[in-house]
Each structure stands twice: as structure tokens, then as C-alpha cells.
Length: 94
Image (cartoon, rainbow, N blue to C red; front, side):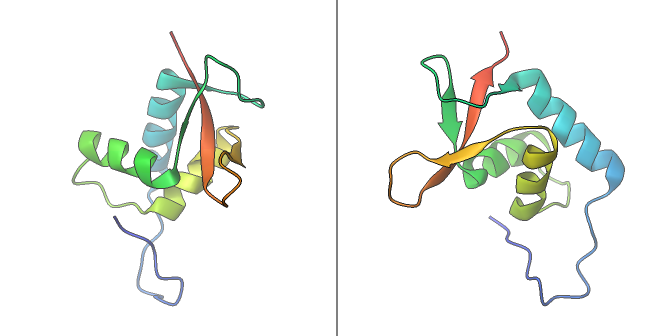
């Protein structure tokens, strides 16, 4: 998994077209939810990043890009275990 080194000035930002493609894919799969209900699932940023990498393996983006697009798409995250393990709330889009 790739985390962007914020001190690395050479790292280009994610391309707008790719950003929108990834966001649209996630919105086709899941609906943002404010609350954790029985229909919802949770995933970490790393798990979502790994899923996207299996679909877009050669694209250049980082886990912080995934976190940003999740926020921009309206998804919420919470500490599901009380142990500072933050996960995104995802309602499957059936």
C-alpha cells in the first residue's frame, strides 16, 4: 500500500479524471450513510484502496487520495471498535 510522503514535493496530485472515475465507481457500489445500521458494512481506507487497486492496478493514486474522495463523496467514518480503528460506513447500493 502506498501512503503519500507529504515531504515529497515530486509526488504529483491524482489526476482529476481518475479521481472522478474512482469516486463514481465507489458511489455505484455504496451509498453514503451517516449511521451504522444493520445493512451497512465498514471498511478501512486501506481496504478500500486495495479494492480499487484490484480494479485500477496501474493507476497512480495513494491512500490519502482515497480518503479525500471518500470525504468528498459524502461518506462518513467512525471508530468502530473504540480502539482508534476508524472505518468508513458503507451502505451497499443494491
